[in-house]
Image (cartoon, rainbow, N blue to C red; front, side):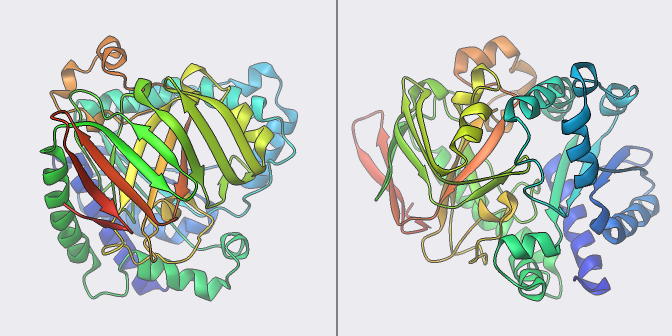
Length: 399
């Protein structure tokens, strides 16, 4: 497990992440919510104390254990399934920051639960998600999250707990004297890449690998985002494309754990922006039911690329937070089915109304599911002037 010294460094990085993501400094008497799994209790205690020292009002909430979650989906009647706790809306309308400490003790405990039931519960909580999204657009709120090692994560990633812990330490730069400073340097270097990407007049991107042939249309008034402090670790740069321009085949060679289920080798065919065919070596029925969650679940919400020069992650970690930032020999790309990110809108966030989002092709859904590909690949930008530029190849940005 992580030592006390490593946990203190983790707290440093998370507070750097929250401050960087918020763009506007946290003020005394503002409210920050700490949500944590039970194995993350010690880090939650450290952060609670740090926030008090800063004059912040910390609010702590432990999330349901896997046993509670399994009981909920097995026993909840329709009204219990969609029940929202009194006070949650009020809290979410007032918090200025949120730190989530993820430390799952089971990854497959919901494998026998009807995916439609899981989807119904997720959709019912979209109201809370929308509140936070609007507050973030208004720069009144931001968030960050991290992962702590557990026996279950190590087992699913086919590592010992010691090996898994070492991957987290390496991946988050916790082995450095001042990891927050390392993250600030990465932030600076990736910001330069984003600036070059945002200067390109792109009509569409063509993504090619042994198993992929996909066209993605960035759309109007877009900008690349990433390494913003939201995720620890995060090396990716991403854009929320115009979902209507997605055509071709996407393939995720990395497995994925979601809502207590395991899926492997997911292949999705898009036509006119919608997923029209879904195949998977394992978990195909679950994938199909997740994509039936709502109208936007079959449409693209994110396209992301990771430069291997920054990421020290080189093992499958059985957790999207790390897997979507995989470096290794070839870097990675991932797409997300479902909701888009409003921070990739290149304009005044206050003007990004629901109707304007629809007009620009920003997708809306209760779902956001990242699916990762680590194959050797090339990404070519097709410009509005007819020219073509390779922007990414073999895990490295070429611009």
